[in-house]
Image (cartoon, rainbow, N blue to C red; front, side, top):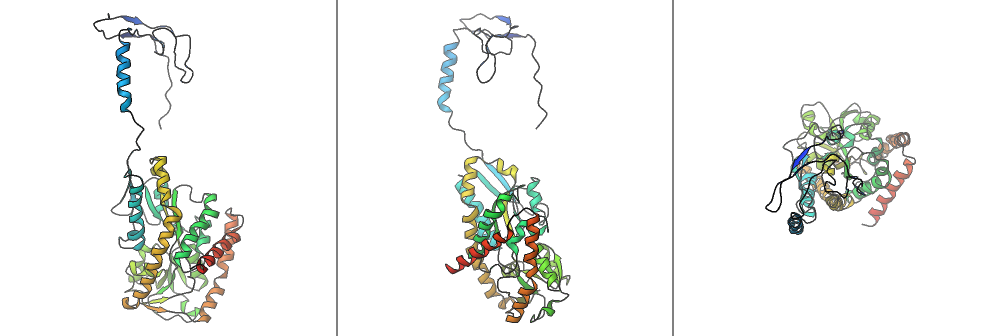
Length: 404
């Protein structure tokens, strides 16, 4: 917005009235202000013929008034309720077009938004990502794109409270874990405004991540020592470190190049992601850990600038098809994608390893400090009872599993 203009008092001016057959032209300098002020606008509204002219008077012949009134009355029926302005928004696309999250969730969600807003809100993917994949939150916060998929964990330590949804062993059934993750966010984290610079419409975890390797069987923790493993976020990096391996924090979009060049030995990656990003020919071993080594928080969000361009009515309609209803649909899609990926792995040249109970117990024991550390970090970040949040998440997950 520009600087406010200072209203100067205009000097006397001469206004020439257009003549009609029944009037004569008159030129009258209006140099005095009327004695009364309108009740709402503060505009001059005196009883003289120059009312409301900012200190200058213009005579209007009585013979013109009937015509003016008729014109106003004739045009009034043409004015209806204000129509919401059509808005076209840019979605910063970085997922592969065939990836289930995009093909089966995000793209249909855009179509649903267009439907529920009567075509007034249209979302169009960009040809390539705006900015960097890791920087999508700031891309939205700075208004460089209108809509984006954000992975908060790609900026380690920036969103410590959301890391509580990414702890090890929180569940491996996305039909339950994904809606539960949203309800946990809504109950404990949304009131804290952790993503206040953008407009979150769906916050959710994905499929749990396990250990993918270029080669080698894992029957003991020592088999992971020294291996360079790609990490998606803070909890995964801490887990990799505790396992004696070396965390390499990179977004999925960079993993193929790193793995194919031998820069990494593997990564903490969900099964369907491994296949969607064409890694099956490179990472030939997959260690399936019950409950998952970690999960990753994702967010579909609008920029504030884009959201403010949408009418209140259409905002409400968009929210109706977002949030928990959208995340619940995601859970079904992710569960199918997970099942399909695990079934396809052998045909893709990936051996799925089921770790012995001794290794599972060793993993659980070794990764215990992750949870304790997050409790401490979360309290310092302003979450009064982080233990209650994790209990809520685990209780809701157990209840959801029992109900199936």
